[in-house]
Each structure stands twice: as structure tokens, then as C-alpha cells.
Length: 124
Image (tube, rainbow, N blue to C red; front, side, top):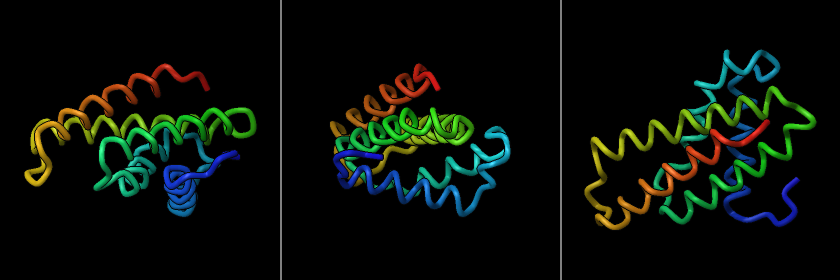
């Protein structure tokens, strides 16, 4: 898994470990994907838009690689990622971070929207 590990890949692997520790991932993904979204959020907090994009890309890579061996886990992580990104996007629109400049906020909004679409269109 993950041929070229980066910081983004490490964040994904840590998030997956956290998900497995707090969720019964053997259960149907609908039962735990909302809880897993909180685990993902913890690893996306306080990242720049570029780091967020890299990490989201690594999540999509993880989902694709896992779908053959554990479709339920891959689908649950996909759904959790979509929930997390939608919540981040909603929060960014109602309460933009004051210490981040407007360009970074716009970049983050664009990244979140892009990866929501990519995740929704990802076949598992």
C-alpha cells in the first residue's frame, strides 16, 4: 500500500488506525461512517489548502487500493471523507478562520469542493 509515502499518506494511515480503533469497521459502513468522519477531520485540521489537497488525494488512493480487499471499509472511508469535507466546507462558509487570508480561504473552499466531487464520483 502507498508506494511513495509522504506526510499526506502518513496522515491517512493514522486516520485509518483511529477509525479502526473507534469504529466496528466489520459492521455495515452506514453504521460507522459518520463517526469515522470525525477521525478524518482530526487529521485535516489546521492544514493549508495544498496539504489538504495532498491528503484528500491520498485518501482517494487508499480507498481505491482497499476496495478490492475490503469493499465495506473502502466505502465507509469514502462516505466518511465526503461527510467530513462537506462539514468543513459548510463551516468555512459560515465561520471563516480570521487568521487565514482571504486567498487561502478561497483556495480551501475550491479544494474541498473539488475533492467532494472526486470522492462522490469514485467507484468502489
